[in-house]
Length: 93
Image (cartoon, rainbow, N blue to C red; front, side):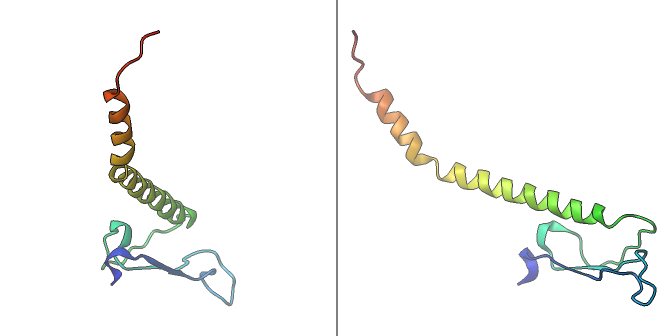
């Protein structure tokens, strides 16, 4: 069920009592967007917006590719209409 799903769980603070913005935990669950799962990574002093931007860009890329694929498969109707126009007799003025 999670093969095509990606769930991001996070906390807004690294430590609740001191309100730090360091060491904020992020958990990615599922295999959506083809991320390699089953590992634990630690990136010291890296802004979390880099992860969020990577997720946003990858999601936009996947959506764009699916949209292009849908347009490609939906194209026989316009191609058939274009073929009929080229097969019609030409009128010379």
